[in-house]
Length: 226
Image (cartoon, rainbow, N blue to C red):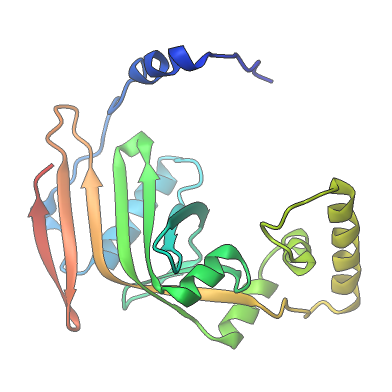
């Protein structure tokens, strides 16, 4: 196990400025040859990330806004992407992100694969995918993941860690007694994109940026300045 070193606040700036950026052998991105639809391009970049053994390439940052306009971000897993340009993720509807999406359905996703110098930014509107698909998503999760969701109380203050273990044991027992048990507020969400940007880093800082904007049923592409 690596030993954690300490650093005072006066050295943080030096630590940050010592980090190298845009290093290694980066893949090429020919924006002129990109498909007319962003979904095939996303799938291609994802496959390249998987083949390149990028750690957890399905992890993405979900950004939401509450009723007061205050933003929140967290990392979660992309569950699916469909042909119409919807990115899927799941959570409890009673969680902070679920409450924020109920108050303001506009959200953004960010994928970042530093080994390839690539980002994908997705903006759109979030809607629940429906109870049947939500239940199927929940039952596809591991038993321990389902137990954690059934124990509830996500993001609440945990006064005693022993309470969490008791709640998990109770949830495991419920799953063992009813293997088709689904958390009542578990929701599969679909973010239907109206914008998708692909960002490819370049060693000379001539980064390639390609923006897709939805115009009716079709997409329009724009090159952006780095």
